[in-house]
Length: 306
View 1 (cartoon, rainbow, N blue to C red):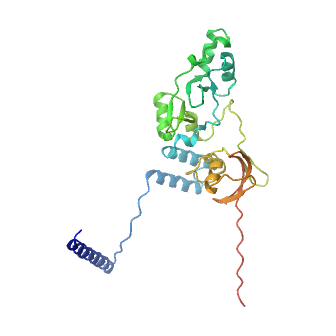
View 2: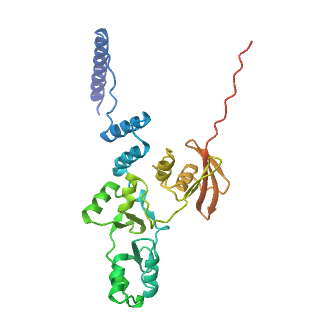
View 3: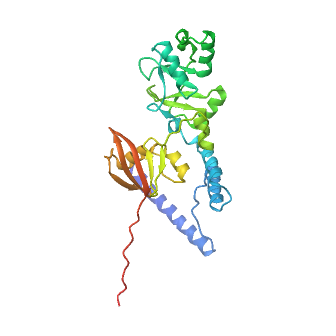
């Protein structure tokens, strides 16, 4: 900008400042005051705030509040937040003998089982127990005559960044219940089911075939012993806590994120109003953590001089 341009800009800037000062003083002399407008909250925030207020007033029970909150969170959460991680995903090698393959699938408590070849990142199909039983009936119950890969359906892969709202709509549109979650490189991260998403709304759905996993145990001293793989959202919902789940999905992930390290056993940390004590570490994995309310140190009383 030329020297003349700088002078013009300075003059105009000073003129605008003088006009604004004159405006403010004129409005003040007339009894008006300029107030900065705060940005309006979104409809989701307004609805969530109203439900929380009703809950505090006793007009809405906790279960109803959690269900409305879960419904509102569908567009904010991704499938990676609710999926079954690959380390906990039950799957089977498609190259083992047919008899062993059929037996392993039938012994599984799950309706659907992913098949892989070579490595878990190469999912080649998903076997539905109902289809396997039909195939067994066709060969008069002879396990060795069942060609399991032919019984399997084509796997459906979804990105880990898909929102739960998008995935729910996709499940309904495709009339499907099961998808394999992959990262940006195509590597398998886990699996997600329609039930996983519905449970985000209505809470845990248990049936007669569910495995009873002791992930959370209430102790007599008031502390809670938690498996490191327990999702933060599940713990918050069960105990009405408010631990943040923006940067981590599991309790172990939260401790690692907050400490910026992988703590050793017996190390203790305090954050978010809780005391976290590492009870068991398995290699680089925090297997078990004890959580108790943080102790607030009493402030020394100030003595009034006589």
